[in-house]
Length: 142
Image 1: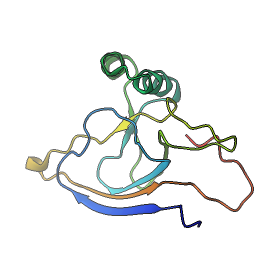
Image 2 (image 1 turned 180 degrees about the horizontal axis):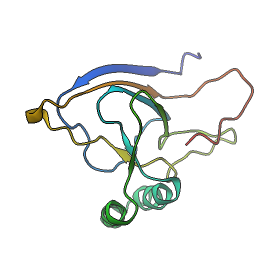
Image 3 (image 1 turned 45 degrees about the horizontal axis):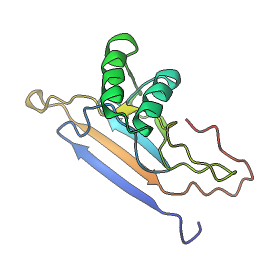
Image 4 (image 1 turned 90 degrees about the horizontal axis):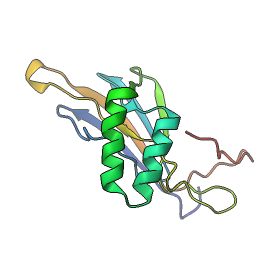
């Protein structure tokens, strides 16, 4: 890793819902694994792209309206327990120097009912620069 590359590692036992609203991450990439409990909920790529573009344009009102429609007509899918979920964030940088602003993946945390004993064990890795020595561009990360 270069000195400019950073990875934040967070192992959490969650007894409450962290981010119940659909949102994008302001990082290069995020890797999520839920070892126990309900998995992260992710919108499909097409719906995610429409909302991320509206959000990047500063249109929070439009973005919120689109999220509301997505809830009804294209609801997010839950990632399976123990499955690795790779999420491109707003700060992903492509080989040509352009960024993924307006192309990040829209997702949220699932609802947790702590009163009924629900909880999640998650591992989250936030990457500020996705450095890799394999020689591939990795510009297709979604």
